[in-house]
Amino acid sequence: MRKRKFSVPFMALLFMVLTAGAQEVVYEEYDLDNGLHVILHQDNTAPVVTTSVMYHVGGKDRTEGRTGFAHLFEHLLFEGTKNIERGKWFEIVSSNGGRNNANTSQDRTYYYEVFPSNNLKLGLWMESERMLHPIINQEGIDTQQEVVKEEKRLRYDNSPYGQLLPVLGENLFKVHPYKDPNIGYMEDLDAATLEDVIAYNKKYYVPNNAVLVVAGDIDVAETKKLISDYFGPIPRGADIQRSYPKEEPITEEIKATAYDPNIQIPAVMVAYRTPGFAERDAYVLDMISTYLSDGKSSKLYKKIVDDQKQALQVGAFNIGQEDYGMYLVFALPVGETPLEVLTAEMEEEVALVRTELISEKDYQKLQNKFENRFVNSNASVEGIAGTLATSYMLYGDTDLINKEIDIFRSITREEIREVAAKYLKPNQRVVIDYLPKDKTDN
Image (cartoon, rainbow, N blue to C red):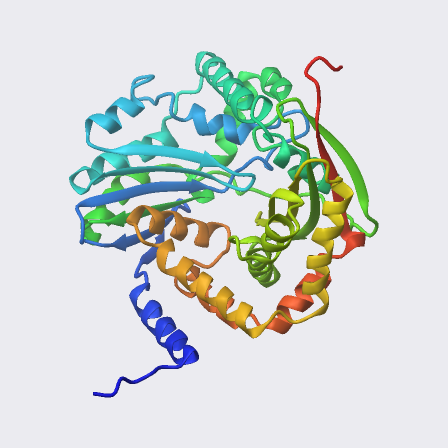
């Protein structure tokens, strides 16, 4: 029997249709009277449930001289509550077959637990305790300050290239809080009073500044009743007014130098200030970074690492943030290759994206990569919970979990060229030489 051959465009279209149907996430959302936004996703295929709360507070939410509070609170709100003994949080979770964690960015803080579904009530109770009854005292603050300091020493001060992101922030931003590291400055945390910390909790960790997501093996009616019981009585906080300083555009190339005593091989960073991640242009920049450096067949890697053997590593990253993004192109040289040579080689590839259309073949490869990412992005209930919370709180559109792939599908080769020409110009960049420094130097 004669085999039927399918064209590449037909197969791509078929793949799009199949993934669109297979990946749809069904959810229900509503608000409690106190302003808490609730999102429920029922998936009874496995007996697990994720309970999570995202607060719209991150490193940028601070005053001068009081940086790092959101990251401190990531740790502090595990200390204990009115009904959870100090130091017992993780023990309660693990002894009931669960696991939990939290993380903080410049824009939000996220707490979550994953339990067997018969412990849904426990997960909701614990998160309501965190919101309503946290115990904040000097003992807990002192303990968690030391935890944060140790984390800073481990991840930033004593880790090779650990200062890359702080260096990027301080050079791309002059007035916006993104200029300061998310973890904050230790002298600010040391100077914080108990009154400062209590006031921060009262302002930001309130139901009207949060979204609760419950995803997994749940009964929706029962879950709504539990949420009403545990979270309904929590009082609404005052409305939060945010007004961050605006950055002036970068119109001339800025050169900077930074030193890292933990490295032997220097790096060169070429950075651009870009729009916040909810803007359409930010999606296009995601595609450009994938085109330039995702995988060994990408343009930058193949040219500078494989063919010309000038770099050990090279990469391009669109670092998304709510108010402004940071677009980074960086390289580590081979041997005595000058950093300015790497800068010129990277600019040559970026310039091609600014001035020429990428090939149809490369464009289709990009589309396939983003289709695959979409298929894998919501492969677990835990992942779905995080995406639902992020889509609602930071993008203002919960259904982005289902339709974000359509944004990438709609991006054209012409748009890729236009966005590169808009944001990735030499006169809009900061070039940073990131150099080794002898630990004995002053």
